[in-house]
Image (cartoon, rainbow, N blue to C red; front, side):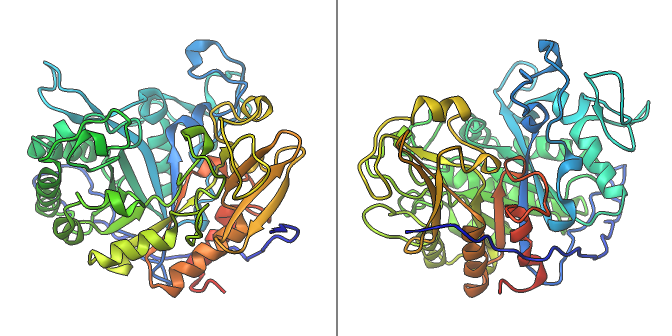
Length: 453
């Protein structure tokens, strides 16, 4: 293993392609969502924007009602928008059936962040309102992050904007929702009507489509033998409803497992027909915090036994084997760490959730990429699995993550195998200055250039 002593550098570019506007229809009485923007290389660089970025500063304890100090967190305007082809907004979740809704429907999990918070002018003396330029105006149709992304659109930025529904903690009621797919589609269409012209993609992040609860990673999410068939029906209904509304170019994407053993329940014929892209979550392969006993990478490109069983390559080949076109596959970049505690290095015994020092600096259990390397740690490159990690011999913590070296290898893999592009989780974890040589998003934009070399 060799230290990462030299960082890669690639020039940033801006892309300019027109966004068309779909024609009106009887279903939508307001302007429709823009057509999907096409970029010269045909590759997609999708950055997830998490709505909790609003509160990300560790000195700020959450919602303004908590009376925290003034904050400077990660807002939509902080995105290096000209480097991206796509932004996916995470997350809308699924409401449990109530007497009011009568069915499981997609809903905001944070009204304040999504569409209520107001953004004031620069140098505002009100610390409870974010400062941006131009500021929000009285009487806007909606505020919050959605309002800010609409401003980015109106400013002439060319990007595709998707709404992610579900997520790891938001998939609890997916199985129930799929029992009445027409009603769930109604809910999605209602969101699109509420925010006309904002979204041109919906990202179904069901973690995970399985036919038995015990196969669902033990996270407590519902599962039913009917889930695969219900999911297939849902995709068909959603596509038909979008087309009938005049949204023929509106995209449907799905987040899917990287584990071949978990793919067997997926309804591939329907998914291949109706999904525009398979977003393969090629990260979180392992961590000693979850009980893994051998240290290794969590987002590596290639399989190397015994310490790196799962990999990008293993997942991609499995999906290709099920008939998924390479041009529909996006692979994931992890701009955060997984920890391996009490270990002497890579491919060594490990146990526990990491040292007290690690968990103090990274209280969520994961370090943001922008925090890495932690003090006392050295960065290393594993040339066999094509992955990065740091090691601190004092705390005995090994942190696995994606560096710019790993980004280069993944971009090269996309080009070599004719894949669609990359999804990056998530934007606020990256180095804030996209011109910084350590910025992952800066290096990922090589996809848009048309070459990874």
